[in-house]
Amino acid sequence: MIETVGGVVRPPPVETVPLAQAHSRILAADIKADRDYPPIARSLRDGFAIHAADAPGTVSIIGETRAGEGRQPALARGYAVEIMTGAPVPSGADAVVMVEHVEHSGEKVTIPQAARVGQFINRQGAEAQAGTTLIPEGARLDASHIGTLAMTGHTGAAVYRKPSVAILSTGDELVDVGSTPAPHQIRNSNSYSLAALVIAAGGKAVILPVARDTEPELLSSLEQGLRYDLLLISGGVSAGKYDLVKPCLRQLGAEFLFERVKIQPGRPVAFGRIRDKFVFGLPGNPGSSMVTFLLFAKAALELLSGRREPLLPIVEARFEAPFEHRLGLTRFLPARLGENGSLRHEPWQGSSDLPALARANVFLIADHNRESWVAGDSIRVLLKP
Image: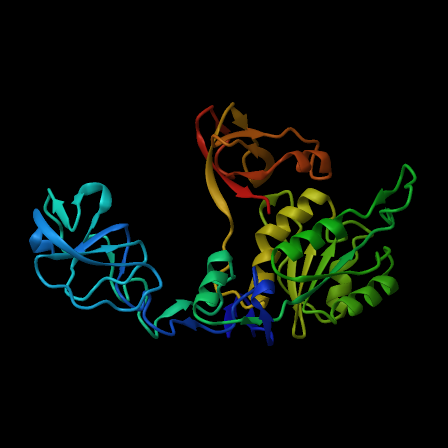
C-alpha cells in the first residue's frame, strides 16, 4: 500500500496489456533479468581479439567471428581472431584492438601499442546479471522500458488499471463549447483542459455535465462524480454567496485535509475525502485550475495509478529581463522558456487569460519572500505537460 497524507491509497487492479499499448502505463510487478546480459562476452568494436600480453607485437590471424555466431575455440598466445562488433569473444582472449589501430598484412597483424586487459569487451553479465531487477514495480514505462520488456521475452506487461477521474465544472455562466455564448456567458473550457491533464498524467477522464449553482443540482452532480476513483471539481470553491461546493461536500460527509494554500493563482483550492474517495475543489479560472491540478491533483492521480514517487517537473532557468512581483504569496506565472535556457515572463491579465497560458510553456515560480530578479538571475520553473 502507498501511504499518503490523511489515508492509505490502495493500488488499482492489475491488467495485462500488449507491449504496443504499454507505453506510459504503471508497471505492476518487478521485471527481472531472465539471464545474464550480455549472456556471453561480446566485442564492442570491429577489430582483433588478442591476449593483451601480446601487445605491442605481431600475431597470427587464425579465424574470424561475427555477431550471431556461437562460442569460438579458445585462443592461444601469439594468435588473434578477426572480430566484428557484437561477436562473441573467444575464451582466452582478454582484449580487442580496433582495426584502425593495427597494421594488417596477410595472415599477420601488428599491434603497435600496448593493450589494456578488458578493453572493448562487454563482459558476460556486465549490463545485468540473471535475476536482478531491471524495472521496478511502480515505474511509468517509457521507450527504454518497453525495449527491456521485449529483450527479456515479455510480449505484454502487467500494469495497474488507469484510475477513472470525474471532471465536474460548476457555474451558471458556463455553456457548452459548441454554443455561442452571450456576453455574460463563457464556454466550458476547464473541463477539456483538465481532461487533457488527466490523460497526460495516466488517468481516464470522464467529463460530467455542468452543475448549476443550486444546492440540489450540485449535490446530485457530486454524487455522480463520487462513483469514480477521483473527483475534480472546477469552480464554486471560494467564499462567495453562490460558491456552494464546499458546503455541499460537507453535507455529503467530506473531511477536508486542506481548504486554502498560500499560492497565486489557486489560493482557495481544497482537498478532501468522502468515504473512500478523494476530491479536489479547484478554482474556476483556467490558470488557477491548471496550476492547482499540476501542484496537487496530479500527484494524487499518479498515486492512484500505482506510481510510487510522483515528481514535480521543476527545472532552473535564467531571466532574460528584470522581473518583480508582490511579496506574501508564492506565484506561478506563465512564462516562455527558450531553447537557450533563457526565461521570459508572459504578460497576462490574470488567471482567466487562456491566450497567455497558451503562449507559455512553463510557469515561473516566484517565491513568497523575494520581490525582484534582474536579468541573468536564476529561478525555478514548473514545466507544462
